[in-house]
Image (tube, rainbow, N blue to C red):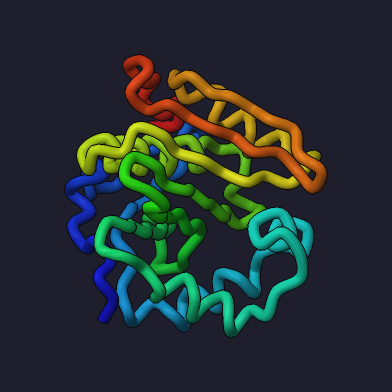
Length: 185
């Protein structure tokens, strides 16, 4: 078992949460037994969404294994499950990359995109980051993935977007303001 933070209470309530379209999800910390569920989740995501998350082609079995493990002591990973089933519909993770910095990454299955789930996941990870003394979150986003940039820009935090040769680097100051609680919740 990795050193992954297992206490989801640090990233917000653990009961069912209603998204803006009325659908409900349950957030929970990732578990070592989630590899099969994550593999099924990844197999149900479109190639375009997978490319945006992993910045290119990926081996789904290796990706599922990676999403379950390889975390440090101050990292956190969560999955969202549809309240009506055990199916994983999203994965989000925060990886500490410095004393006060962490990288965030998300993947929401296509049929759940646009409901506010990404914003909800981001708000929980930002809360966790602040509790752990992290002031800056960063994300590498492929050019053209405007929806992901919009999640960060709509968070209520100060966001800086820098264009790079192969994409966009987003830097979020989680100490800059009182965030707008995810519009989805």
